[in-house]
Image (tube, rainbow, N blue to C red; front, top):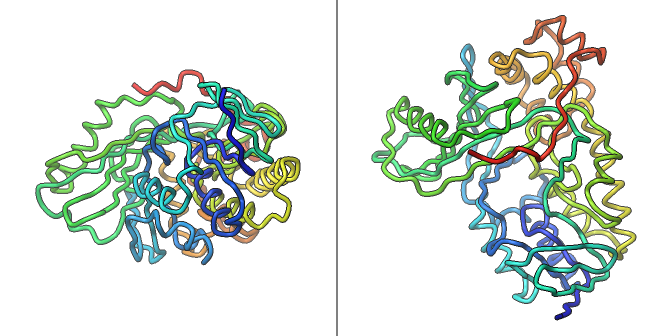
Length: 399
């Protein structure tokens, strides 16, 4: 059995774990890091996006090496309303993420193809028998869902394609809900990476976790055709199922997510309850960890728990909106909530995505004619509506 030593072992080389490693490397270069990832590449198979208003200067500097697309605004489309917004928008890719981490970290600070069998106080055991001894361990291996959280699902299939001709887009389409509404709230998301290269994602806010790959691929092709685009080649593809949280037992979720070690990213519940959006929280947490004076096991475990609990408390209003979406709205009419939301002030929209809605924002969202049946909305507010579905990983196979 081999033994490796580190000051901090970070389990999971995805967005949360990788950003913590980068932030620590910048702020504490003397710290011996070991980033452990079960796959051969870091970052998985993803396109992540964020608004310029989501992160401050330090956050933008941290993310800059991973950014592949940057635009000065974006658009949304709904059946009865369309809008262009001037908020800057950025997209990152897994390949850039992997390159940036390998460029910034020493070669011996990255361990890929390594599956974790057990993680505890100061020690990690890998499937090949390797033992990692560390002063602290941070678990960023992704969310564990065992029924303590409830709500619905956001699922998607995305394809980066090369077209036979230029697409003509100058900015992303973050939501095009003018498409046929199927399986809940459906919209198409488009990122123009080049004159004839575009990422097209077919997304659903659904009660089901099933991804019918052939059906979604056909809808992407049909959408491209409806825009006058001919797909010449599919360059990259990704699919996923993410939780949309409307309620839950936070203490039960925390206890079920692992032993007494620090946690990060979705493992710690650090994502937006409505959008499943994790970039802003991953950036904030990574920068905060790097500024901690005490990087011992106990200190980091306590810090991550307090941070995650504050996030849960702060996002109660967002969970209420998720409840409205999944419990008050008819599935094929869920788009009306986002159509209503996007008629509001640009700064309110920015604060919502950044997870920083104010009391005035919350009041403003509920002003006017509700986009859901009044009786159902009142039932949700009173806590007497339909019970939300427990969220578990069981049955999340993609078909």
